[in-house]
Length: 329
Image (cartoon, rainbow, N blue to C red; front, side, top):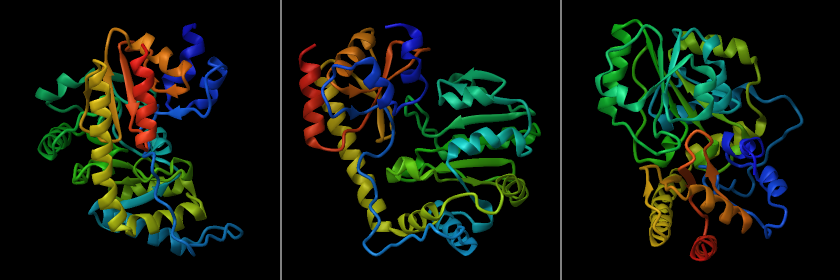
């Protein structure tokens, strides 16, 4: 299989369409473990109707942003809804954050697409600040590294002293007990709804920032930045505190079960985020192909062929399927 043929599977997870084309003889249904999306999504309660006929209700948008702000622990005036945190990433250069944007590596692919330069994570240990913007993910993707609030506060202070900005991509933060960091006038935080709530197709995310920056964002997106479904479902999901608490516990249990299966086959899982695990092995290529041939898609990386990222299976049956394929390598 050529590098060009694999490109669709190494740029983003979730490309079951490309996997089917590359492995046409794989048994169905496919088991998609290539993303960090919660495989057991939040389900709208019965009676939660959405009228998609009229234009989205501006009052519903305000309610959504207020409920999300309460979940994030910030004032509602510092939160704006966007059609996915991916969109917010790509809009960053238009929002007035300092240039150039420097992104860490390894990290999410779109970070590299919008940054002018990249630095290794080790550079954070003695980071003195820069006049541009420092972009990092917390938890990081794909390795699941989590930076403490103290580290983030130090980086924000260093950036502010240098006249720069700190941009935090917290797309996976909801799965953690309390990893979020939202302080500082020169700090921009991006949050994702779809990852933790398992509803990536809703296309909903948030920007947490100073009101002046959010005003520019609202001008760019217009009066109806997200759909009626996103407003109604998002507001109800953020208000469902019992589901959020139970899901955080369930994800930790699923991640531990995945770790045990991988370890049984000599694959050491790393990362603190319970939505996914990363494995490094010299046999990554053969493991990927063996799994794909059996209809199980994990995430390979073109720039790190020794790495594979595994999303957490939804059930014991899916975990057993993974275990069985790994046993026959």
